[in-house]
Amino acid sequence: MARPGSAAAATRTANACSTSVVGGQTSQVITVDETLRTYRLAVPADPTRRLLPLILNFHGYGSDAVEQAIYSQLEQAGPAHGFVVATPQGTGTPAFWNIFPKLAQPDDVGLTRALIRHLEAKTCVDPRRVYATGISNGAGLSSYLGCVLTRQLAAIAPVAGVNLFAGCPRPGTPLAVLAFHGTDDLTVAYGGGRPTGVLSGEVLDPVTTSVAKWARHDRCAIRPTTRAVRPQVMLTDYPHCSDGTSVLLYTIVGGGHTWPGALTIPKLGPVTHEISATDLMLTFFAHHVR
Image (cartoon, rainbow, N blue to C red; front, side, top):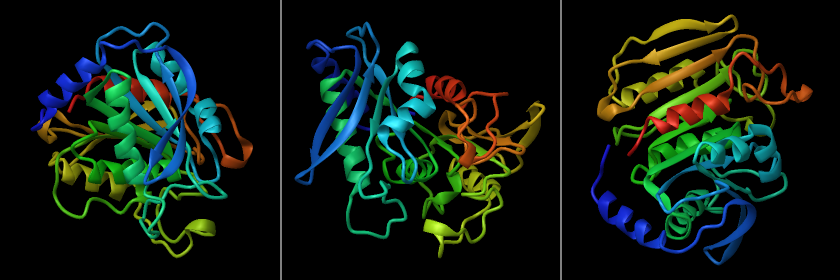
């Protein structure tokens, strides 16, 4: 899925790779609109001078970057598979991502755009292989970014929140999508509707409707295939999507507001260990290049 400017961006990034890149996990800051924003950065332990793919990993509402790094395990699994992983910190108390969008600030799209540019220049990131994931509010942000950062992202993998964003307002550039959602999610209901709590006042699509919208966006076949891949896990696959993209949904029967394969947090509900969202998204991302 090459786009205008990709070659030039790759050349600029290749030049940045002449400088040394330090492996391991660090805490970083970036200035966006004169505001300091923080993020965690995990780089392969022995980085080479070749361009590396980047995963942006967004925490849920009321969580933070540290908890998301531990919960998703992407800081360990990502670099082990050659990915750079950036885990940004939201703003406010409780911390959140401005996705609907309703507020003039913070500009979390601007943060993401600036962070991608910064890491492409400083950390040997391949501009053709930038991906976004997150859980809940962070999943909604990754879906929103998939619509507005079409020149930056190659794929998204929202967990327990693909339906927190209503969908792209008009046809656009196809984008690969891998979603995960539990049928017994009590925070972001699989069937959509009117949630309570911080989301009160919103009307959410069913998860299946949100994923079908992405399939239309990617000009996939109208009818998906659905099959059981594990006793409690169903895979919905929309075939024949444009530009080599794909749209997949893993439905966890009886699953809660959880990250498949992660540690159990009782208040979030049941978590399946029949699949690992982290392993599946790493494989998915590796197959999709912008």
